[in-house]
View 1 (cartoon, rainbow, N blue to C red):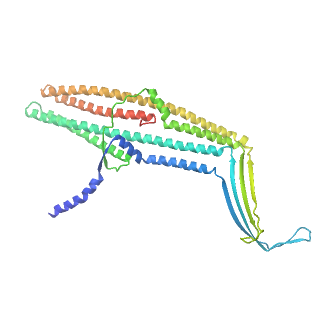
View 2: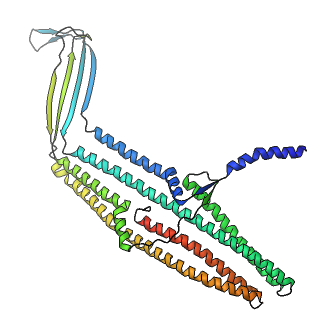
View 3: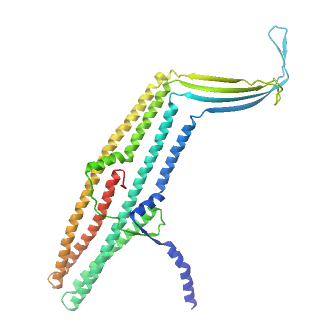
Amino acid sequence: MISRLIKLVLLVLILPSVLMAQSNKDLTINQAIELGIANSKNLKLSQNKIDVALAKLEVVNDNVLPKANASFMYNHAEIPTNTFSLGNSSSTINLPRRADAFVGTASVQELVYGGGKLKYAKESTKLLADVARLDADKSKEEITYAIISTYYSLYKMMQSKKVVAQNQESIMAQIKQAQRFFEQGIVTKNDVLRFQLQQANVSLTELEIESNIKIINYNLDILLGLPDATVLNISDPDVNLKTVGTLYNYIDLAMANRQELKQLDVQNKVADFDLKSIKANTLPTVGVGANLYYINPSGSFTPPSNSYLLPVTIGATVSWNIGSLWTNKNKISEAKVQQNSISIQKDILTDQVKTDINRNYQNYQVALSKIKVLETSIDQATENDKLLASKYKNNVASVTDRIDAETLLYQAKINLEISKADAGLAYFTLLKSTGKIIQ
């Protein structure tokens, strides 16, 4: 009685932790995409890059504001030699043995014209923020594709598991039938053993599929930001075959949507502003300012009336680094070379994008054709399986022929399910190469 009570207490204590350790979650492919994007650490990092670029823009905006400075100084002097004679003159100047003075200054400076460098810096920094946003968009596309790819991989394994389970049921029926035939003396014991061996081989396949399901499920949990013990119940990711347009339609989409191409366009604009900023070094600058001085030599913090000076000055400054007219030429040449390299990079990337789209387009067409071939092969394998089943019952076909026919049928079914999923993934791969995976 005590032993049963202890077991009951242990069960009560352990059961909640077991239930909490593993949970099930129904998940469609669209829900997976939304969840993955919401929890992606890479996207959070991309957003942080955008925030950094916007912070730099605010710093550049601050550079346009006028500069102001203020200072206040107290000075104490000890004068041991307080008698001063001017040359051979008999007149002398008697100075105090010590003196105190208060001096204060305040100034405001405003750059009126700096050759346009502040304007170019502001526009350039704005464009760098656009580059960061495009980088975030690219990361979002990559994450979306990774989720879709993993989801389809899990779906393929699930479908394979279903087909294998159907195969196991069929083999069990074959084993029972073979045992009856053996008892009736129609077949040999070897026939029964061959069916049992086939069952063992299918069981090994089932174990491998189950292991792959756990691995992919775990990877998808991590990708979606879910607890790694969550068992995902996925649904059909809509593997309906989609009719695609022409190859050139997808190339045009890529030219308009690929983030890398947009980034190079923006970087080219940044390089253009950098070039203008370097050229601006050869232009003069104009600034205006105002200065306020407070001079109090009385030695008292609060001076008596008419014992301090408070001059105010207003001025304008024009400066021109004339030497930049000949020292700036190489800097301009360097900036032009760098800008030209961006144009070359875009040409190279454009060719790569076209190659990717063509490859993905052809792969999708092959995937569609493969499905049609497999559907035909399943019809043929089904007829062959029925024929061999009938012949085996009538003791016309061997057990090897019977097993081979059944194996071909179920292998064709697995191949068809995998091919349908591969075609769905190939379609998304084609969309990804256009720079817009969700259209």
